[in-house]
Length: 235
Image 1: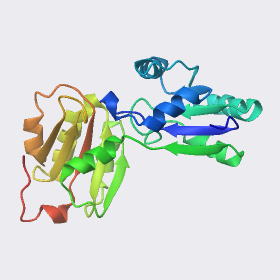
Image 2 (image 1 turned 135 degrees about the horizontal axis):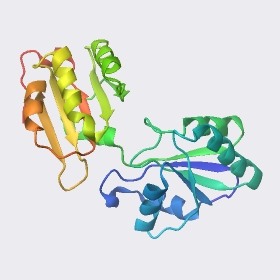
Image 3 (image 1 turned 180 degrees about the horizontal axis):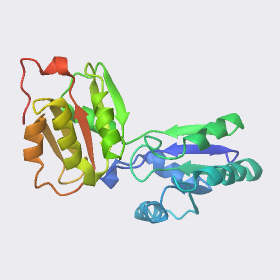
Image 4 (image 1 turned 30 degrees about the horizontal axis):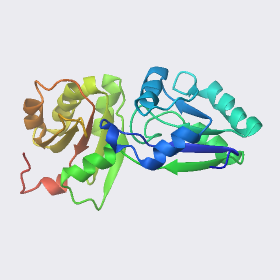
């Protein structure tokens, strides 16, 4: 591995530690330092693979100043760094996009190290015909803004949402109220983990299915209206 001005964007596992790639482990062992969102999460991940590296924090609270600090280390010292997120593939609703952009602008080579992704895992297990879909990401946290955003959602694409574990019930309630109880959807819950589950059904059925479900990471897929006509999905 060349030691000159490189930023590796490294996908890690999303729950099952065996899902990290050999290439990702090789990179994490050889870079000069690792960029993570939270020190506790980043250090625990490295420790689980017997890797010891200096950590630099980059999150929503310090992104502006830390971007320049990390960029200076890459430029001035000719160091290499690996950017990881709390889980899975970085930069999907994670901090770090500006650092990647600044690296491109300043001649620092950016190298993607692909791997596990909760979004792609959910689509793989969904059974959907994956010709067209839209990645939405996170709806607004504010209740009124979230409801307005739901009202503006397009109806002719399957839509992929991420959300915090504690907001599943509220998400389903808001979707049902605005889009109707019969709108079809899929919940991919705790992917790659022992208690992984894929829930199919309309919004009312999903509310019932997940009523006693413990909090956990999930991906939510809202079905497009055209695919719902004349066909009922439930498992």
